[in-house]
Length: 415
Ligand code: HEM
Image 1 (cartoon, protein in one colour):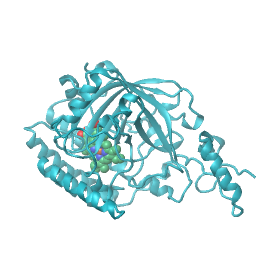
Image 2: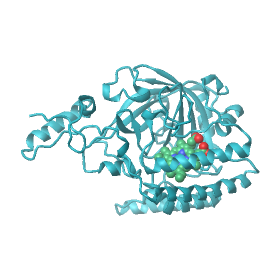
Image 3: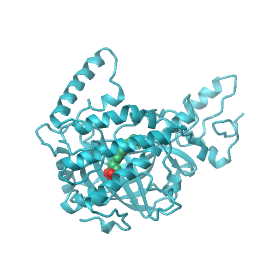
Image 4: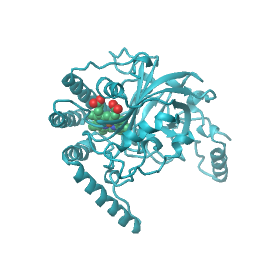
């Protein structure tokens, strides 16, 4: 007998919330049905999407104190970089941009009900977007230094109740890195591991970073021979220096996805950018190799990327609390597959004119809390981000004497 859809606590769900994700994945569904049919006792509930509810989040009592300490420590980095950059303030993370792009995001026309959520609710709807490609350091470094790459997307004209009470904007921001998970799971771990790492990274010169990269790559190769791996937080600096436009980007931390909860990814889909996936940038291409590569690419090429939502299900053994609160946990893609919801298209353009760079770096901010309630950021790392992004952005806008602006139309982005 087929059981009614249930939530992760076993209570019955309304039909819409109990949608079986496997309905959109026929093969997975068939494999799972075979499994269920061969299991005699006890009866196992089929996986359901975890419904969003405010009590999915469970902040530790000491979290606010940890966030205050982190925000104060990161301010010191902001001040150090202000001096190093001759009075020009930069972002405390992802300071160097490699391209500021204009594009369109089109919601897929044939989405099933469970994916028609939040800004993806209207099939076929097209929104203008502004994207900023970056590298994670809170310093302007050579592009030859390995590190995490970033992608920030600002979607224009998104209507709906806002997460932040005073937010009158109609923009929806998403921030991504080219890793599925964040190396520190919550504010507590960021305080003990992330803050010291950020301190070292802000103070190590490029040549020191290049030596660290080389040593770590050697260690990675050696460990591989013994079937071992570097810890995630360190392994990030041992990767190949691959083209940013060929990378897949992940929100790493979860957000509300209307009735559900999801992590988001953006992956290259047109041949123009899949051809760059895994390709290494030449060591001779100089300190602005990534920026030049993006400029050269968009001089003659357009690009497409697929936006997917990894809706959390109650399958598997991961606790729902941990899935929400611990950003270093990878959600199994067998249990919670990424499902395409939209395509972003970037046309041929000048991706890094002086006016664009200055607008993207000094006028704009990207912050996942600039969001509609349907895409509320969730979990400890996101609650931490709410305060540090605001602090970093306020510092830089104030020191540079540039007012923050949320664009209302795409024409505000300089050509
Ligand atoms: C899920 C994890 C995270 C992702 C995906 C992420 C990604 C990004 C990206 C792409 C940007 C660049 C935004 C832009 O172009 O303006 C950024 C900026 C920034 N990130 Fe994160 N980040 C994450 C976690 C954190 C954490 C844990 C901290 C610190 C505690 C942090 C601190 C910052 C700061 C200070 C900025 C600059 C904000 C500004 O000045 O406007 N991020 N992040």
